[in-house]
Image (tube, rainbow, N blue to C red; front, side, top):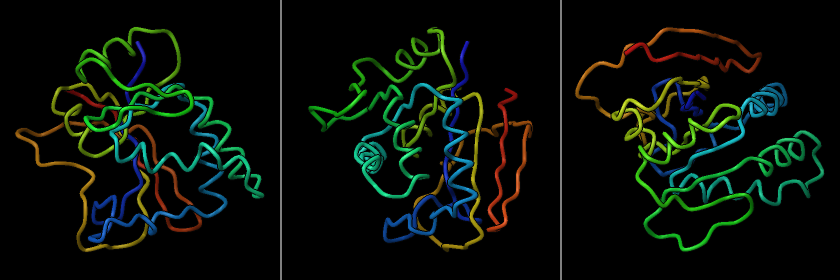
Amino acid sequence: MRDIVYSFQVSLDGYIEDASGRIDFASPDAELHQYFNDYEKAFDTHVYGRRLYEMMQYWETADQEDEPIVVEYAKTWQSLEKVVFSRTLDAVEGKTRLATKSLTEELQALKALPGKQIAIGGATLAAEAIRLGLVDRYHIVIYPVLLGGGKRMFPVFDQPQHLKMIKTQYFESGCIILEYERLN
């Protein structure tokens, strides 16, 4: 079965956006951007909450930009299947569909299909998947910045989530990749 991976860019103090809702602290340099381009090829499906899906819509047309590294990522992203959980959206674009079943039913059905890894994104949606025991791996890109507040990557849990580190990687920019798998 395929793994479900919660992947996010985060500040050193654990925030995915600042107190104003901005994510501009997470601007990858060329080295990190190329890492993301290569990393994305391990996936064939993304599962999003509405807000993250709307932010990622940028990539639907980013292949028209001049920067080759941006075009490469855009083309990879556009080729992926996307499933969006939303109570407010009526339509989505590209290779995207709105979820029609519960989070558990959708993720279990995706995992049972042949293919590559499945990415889940959106802190609220991922928190629910974590609580349900559906997230297999965590991929965290830590930026060398302290935001002091904002939206946290992880919710408060009722019980500890035990993990095993499976990868670390360091970048010239000071960013660090940490990858863990779930133990329980």
